[in-house]
Length: 476
Ligand code: NDP
Image 1 (cartoon, rainbow, N blue to C red):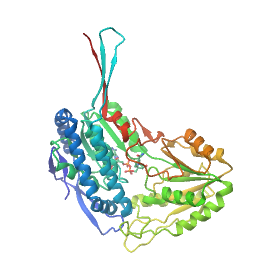
Image 2 (cartoon, rainbow, N blue to C red):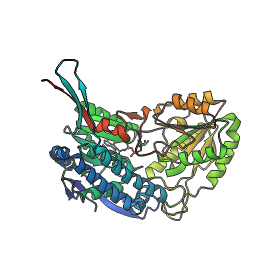
Image 3 (cartoon, helix red, strand yellow):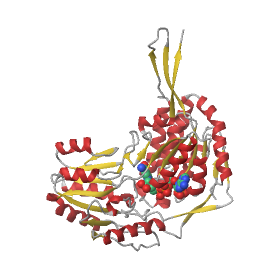
Image 4 (tube, protein in one colour):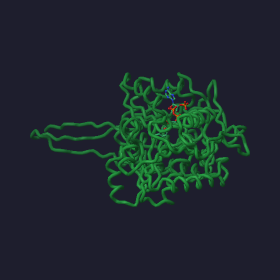
């Protein structure tokens, strides 16, 4: 059994949940302890106790610890990438890439620990100086989803620790092993007991207990809109600072002058890689009429070449989806698309592989319009839709007609369209001739509209959430 980590000690649970390989349901990775309300309370209390001492260390000490963690993650990326592919179902190459990114994030924030800058400014009053400094927020809760089980915990834990906060992490129940491995690496460094704590278990119990704890200073959440809304409500009641990263229904616009082969590649990668289980996935392909038929023809041919199978088989392009209930949800959306009158031009079925797993064929709907449920709600599976539009102006209007605003892409060879789209697409991240998914670790990540709330994550922007600003007036 893999235990929770509370106040520097591994604590087993009364109950456990099993982490199952979605590529092979007969393969159990391990049992993971479920944190009871008391475990969560103890973790927050330990973090509270440890936080001032951690913030009081020099930034060099914190930087060295984060650097050590980052180095070990990168050195073990093959092994940890394999674990990630085994528990989450993204391909081995994607798993290794994600783990590598988690390591780079720790290394990046090791440097950021040394760059917690402030300012000194003359007062408007004679003989008075004003200092503007940043300090740690305090005890931070982090709740993370299963689709990036290594990178998302890393991009919350690393900046929180860099700037002197203590952390209680609650990873997703379906994929706790990658987060457990990160915390295990941290546990062997010189990080004092209580600075980083891990509480696992179902969100509606362990997660809800963490959010409701009044001693939490801040909560960083990534997951679905519904959970985000509930967390926001509790945080407001408790006066807990919060940031939310939620879903997307990301448009990829393909205009007549696009490089056709590139556009197909960008669409396949953005819509189908990681089995479409990315908040930044290109789920809406908005195609102008001059290129529509050629694009759809080539896209279907590309989909026919994709191998669906065991995530850890090097031949596989598309692994399984995470869980049986997620699979049912995706199949229900596919059925809904059919009933709404969209043309199912590729896939639409479960796939039988050598082992029993949650496999879905890459699926493409054409002749859709933006009012259909399959174009409005996040499906979170290997399913994309095509909408045929007259011209760039209509494409932009359709792209922006969504409650979400995480990522938006355009394929074009025209500087005019690219520049216009950069300015007018309603999203936090814009991609030109690139998939809507796939981001760097050293720049801000996040969206607008209902996709995100609060400070941006990652890059230099992360400091905004994990510190608070203090203004000090010094008289003579
Ligand atoms: P959920 O919102 O169901 O879960 C996210 C996390 O919240 C999990 O750790 C979950 O625990 C926990 N949780 C669930 N209910 C509660 C609760 N009542 N109180 C506290 N915590 C709770 O989302 P999924 O895990 O299903 O992830 C998929 C969603 O995440 C998609 O909608 C996707 O778009 C979004 N996402 C957004 C990203 C972004 O940056 N914008 C990035 C990645 C995903 P448990 O798993 O144990 O239920």
